[in-house]
Length: 531
Image (cartoon, rainbow, N blue to C red; front, side, top):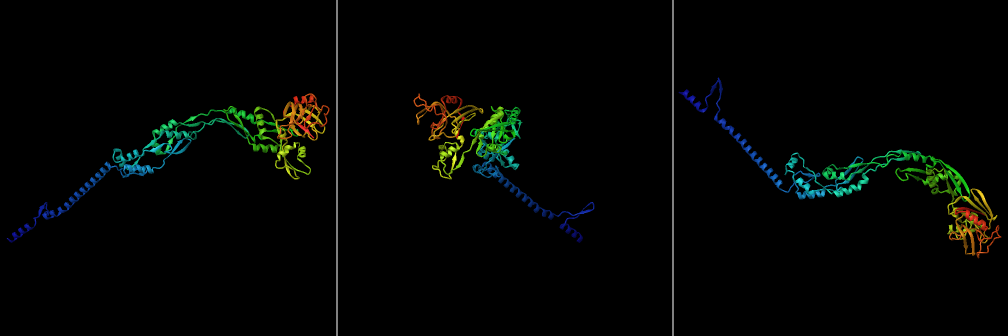
């Protein structure tokens, strides 16, 4: 009994072992199962908590999204022209863009260059309201959601174009942008003429350029480049070989200059070869012109050349470049072999010596003394040592000189000699002025012809009058050649006085000789009056 009671007691306190396949497996005690339930409960509670938290956050996100979706705010992160506009209202964003968008530079480009302008100069302005409207669409449209999903919050600006302003700008820039065609021409190098080819030009196609700008304003601003449409422009002259050949003919011309000094009746001749005259006279060829050949003169070099080449002239004489150069050009282009060049005389400076007067100085220099007085207005009375200016002897020869005729008068011999081409035509007795009204020595020229002149101071009518100089530069009165004068139209004066001074400054000839000289000596013939 005791043993049975003992077994019963164990059975009440613990389960009996179960033998399976001879392996003892203890039975699970009910108290062990109750210990696992608290851990599973906590997990469940945590799961429920996180679910609710996620739900709350999701609701918050949805609420926030809905708040932005239906509000006037732009989706966070949005940018226009790198300017943040996210979280701003459309009104705020418009104001920000209007105040902060920088000037956009546009390069107008074609194959030969680029010209920078601003978008505003090109008539392009940002449409702020339309651009902000696009920014507002981020997160509110399918395309906007795609931008958000891809992380692209940069909004492409919307641009407006003022076509008339763009056209005005392009038209103003057309001369600068275009490339003028280059006609075939001739270059002169080292005295040789060489033809060079034509070069095609470019012109701006305004219509095509403007059409592209109208169709692609955003692309133009985004890239900062406006491709310019151009079209080729052909040169008008494509071959200049014939001009080069003609120019070479000019460049090979040798010119002889025949110098003539009408004051000293001196002549000389020089030969100028092309390498010499091309130092100061150059040919420019412009094919297509009515006269395609023009000449450029370096007057400084020309003066230097003449001074060095014709040093025999000395400091008192010179050649006039303004006369020689046109004559040179004419000779080169017309095929002449030589030209005539007049030698001129400089004014002189004279230092007054004891006993000299304006009258004596003028007599010695061959210049009527009132002309010297006029050249020295500050010196009324001469004093020893005064330096006075004596006008150039060329002032007495105002007309073009007749080079092959010359009249020589001698006061001391009271005779005249008339020459043509170096040969003596006539030799005549003459009469010059009395001592109180002398004839001035010097070199003058025939300046006028009057069939009968009247001298009011002496009441003389003078037939076949030829004026040769004015004694006073400010007066129209002239001394000259004439035949026997009269006072009444009938009685001739001084018919028996030839060979002695008798006139009031003129040169008296017999009426027959005066008429012959009147017909022979045209204006410009030089008259040399010797003392």
